[in-house]
Image (cartoon, rainbow, N blue to C red; front, side, top):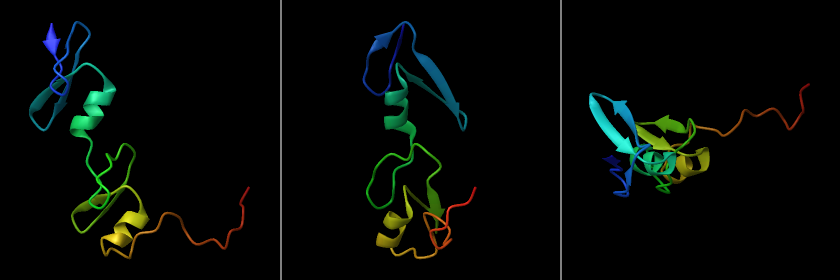
Length: 85
């Protein structure tokens, strides 16, 4: 049985993730995310979705980017609030 590198649980259904020439072993996606997901440069939350990148840093949202002094990112395009079919 392989042991999860995050929590140490030995598990017969552990899985491997191969990234950049390294191999990681986890017993759950939760442990994989906790260990491998990039962290927001401002609030430190794990970025599970696409996130945002600016000036070599990752952010979970435009608000956090603004708090870090990055003003060119936006959560959505300015459409005046109009709904589009």
